[in-house]
Image (tube, rainbow, N blue to C red; front, side, top):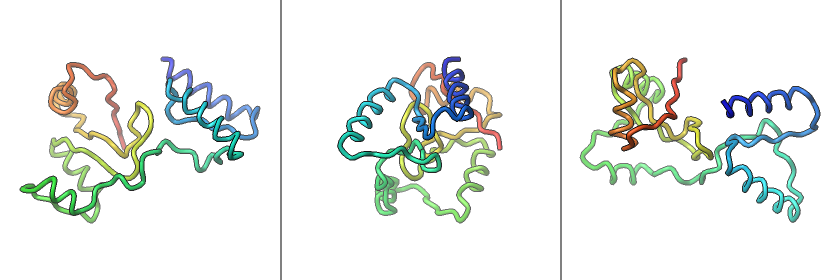
Length: 151
């Protein structure tokens, strides 16, 4: 409920034109306070300018944190590794067959929500999928932050 109210407030602020520039962190939690303090200190020294809205994002992970092909082959020795021409179609087909996949691409996200670069994708219509993910993937009894993506 609180997150929904924050989103509505942010939308109203954008629509109101009260601010010439408005930067909204993509992870509206307690970590935003420390990020804001650090940004304030950076601004005092470097005269940092607000990011234009087109450049605002939540991907603050290292640009070079993706493993190389050699690292992948070393880690997954004995597995059948196949590079797909259309990775999205292949992932969708794999999920449609009832399998769970780990999706890893680009820079990692900041904050408590997955923005798509680090995700666990599972079939929506699989009975008991939440319990399976909790016990076999997350190793937790309960984990409530599952999202449904529907194209």
